Length: 534
Image 1 (cartoon, rainbow, N blue to C red):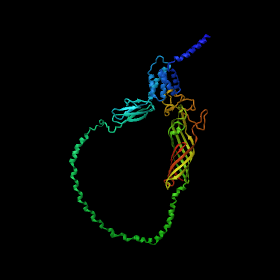
Image 2 (cartoon, rainbow, N blue to C red):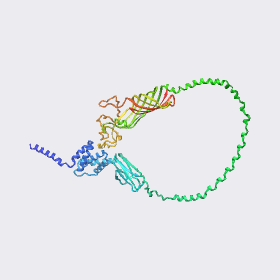
Image 3 (cartoon, rainbow, N blue to C red):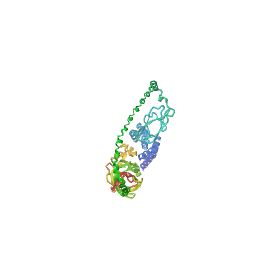
Image 4 (cartoon, one colour):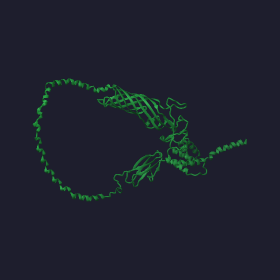
């Protein structure tokens, strides 16, 4: 009986003595380390900072630096990594502390490559140049200085005799930025040393030519005294010969023959009757010309073809999630137009190619680990009916404004939709702590579950995208694989354009050019076509 009682009291003493033996800050350190491992850096940072203030340990300092790096405070993180990397094992350090010192060296080298730098390069030497960044003077601005990415930097430059210059700069991850500095001189404070107007050699050179030119005074010769016009060549006056005196034509007077006078006989009597006959005959000739402008109204059927494309902006992707890119969808259409007064009924069949290169995307409300790289090479046919009202802009209906809408359906007859899980491209394989959220446009495709090593939070088989790896093709929305959500590839889909506005140019009664734009369910519509009357 004494042995169990003694054992109980021994265990109780150890449990009660543990808090007394624990070092200062160990409680905060353990809580902060666990929070950092779970990805809760906002909670971990104050705990780890408190632990470091009470007692420094590499095992708590490295997670603190990891959280700083995730929050974008790279300079703080780099300073801690470098400090820990330079430490040596001291008495009292645990195995976790030794591992932290080893990992700090690798992380310090990797983080240095991410920290952006800024160089301020003056366009010319400025006397007394002083450069401030966010109110702090930097020495030797022409050498690279490191700053945190995404932080607005206000660069202020001053120099004697020049106006103060201020610029705002935001550096990106891994960016090496060189800022060209040009200062404007203050009005009325031009530095004489720079301009050196002493070099007045040109006026010394000008003296000899100034003396020579007046000495020559060529105009004194007054060549105009020769006055060649005094010869008065016009005195010769060849026209004095008066060749016209030889008026042979009047001597001949061929018109005296007046043969046409014999021809004038018909106008004396028959001309009046001839003039009377064409007058009633002219009226029917004028009448057929009047209906010509009305002829186009009778041409009620037109056949046309042209370009039809769509533009899908990134904003359209952002309505459903995050990521996406601008996509241009080229195509064409063949149309048949039936005119009913001012209304055009347009029946068309169109082709469109929805090709999109690799693009990051995740649905709204999903975590960063759900990002995928999506791509497509879909090709579709669309059948539609459009109703357009014509508003003439001139009397001859050369130009007309069109306004209307259209409905139809599309069929995806060729191509596939590809989806692949993705992870941050700047992560280091084998180090899970580097697989942190970043710019989604820098994400790369997963090669398989936890491939590369350490990417298990991004590349896994836990969610609906468990098999979304290279080569995966999305099924159509008419199929639902067992244990998987319904496919997203559209096979047959509705199509709507509202509104559609356009301009028609009719250079002839049988030809028309149509320019149109509109908003449709497949993007912003644009088209240019040509049609002929049948």
